Length: 214
Image (tube, rainbow, N blue to C red; front, side):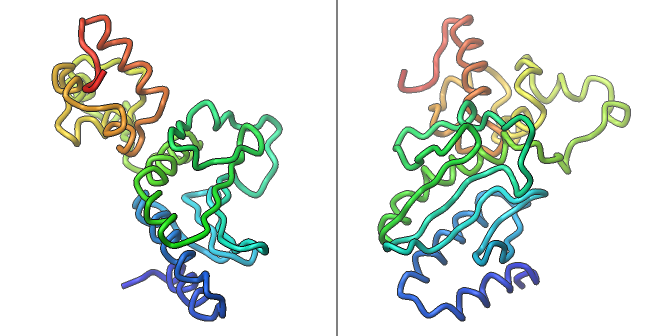
């Protein structure tokens, strides 16, 4: 059953009398499915999504089509987050408006559907780079001694706990298993962003290995 916030987005979409609503509804589905923590609300007169702070806001373009704005929340930060350093966009979906703000435009539902895989990867990288609390993280004091080492089996702790857990959940606990995956496959995992790929690539190279396809 949809939550009250999801119901608010669905109600807003139903009330819209615009032939671009199906495009916007498909875009909203992609955002909602990118991470289980995502919550949709109506903010700034359009469906907008948050985990703690809002990070993805949709809208209908006056000149046609729809838009997705990726940002770092309503409040202006004294020091903008360097999101562009953490988000890879090999298909060129994004137009950057600064280091912490990017826009994607779509003119048809075919455009939205074709971009699903690439957009999902971008959203997961964006979420991973945001300073959201990790609800699954266990404090060091409550974790059994050696549990982190057993889970990562030699992967560097600089990857971060979210990325390490994502790899473990995929059954990737050894560098030989890592070498069987492409960068694209790994970037699709929640918490695995460009920084993690760079670190893992260096570790593979040091062992005479590489990502699949390289």
